Image 1 (tube, rainbow, N blue to C red):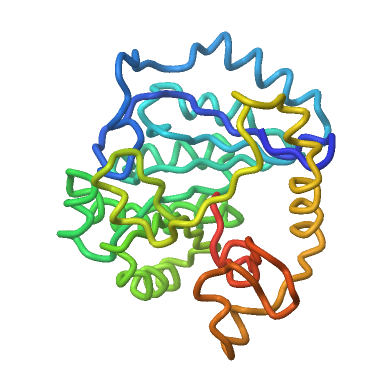
Image 2: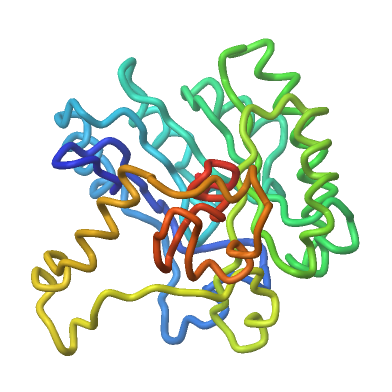
Length: 279
């Protein structure tokens, strides 16, 4: 769940742990002893009833590690989740979509469909996913556009792109693809390596830690001066405009900026500037 201060604004629901693809960047590849399955509808209905009572929640997002369309009752779940004050979104790899399923999703009240596309080329996407997912995804982008015009013209389409060294060159073509298919948002995230081989795919390697719960209590870490200063800096965003300036080399290592901020300076962060986001 995502919250601002004490008010929950957005709830993420993972309806299933099953997926029809085998993307090499997916953490499912390192699961051991995990029993795959679907969320029980009784549990789901109980959760949604609770969610609807929290008036600050404005978005319910179906998605996570697996493919939501693997759940046989996903359309019914979306219908249950959809109320006038709540926006319902779902992310999919797109390969299981067809006109019948798209129609069911739109009639159920889906407001935004996110399609995960990690390459602008058939061969590359097939290598990443282990299946001809990209070709099907493009066809279903077109089908979604045609059907939303008939059923719900207000429904939106988004593309999620996991950036890696092997596919970052495709990003300009993904942007062009988004324009052609009337995509409202394109969100980009840096790959998180779950296996050693994927470490070489990372585009950004720096990390930041404010403590370890082996050595300190969570409340102590949260209230530490370093962490409080960091949160304050992020909220105020008093950083140098690295992404629009480019007149120095500070952005190369992110250790300091021209305002005197120390690591992480964040001025050179595409996510902080709003250029790259996760759904």
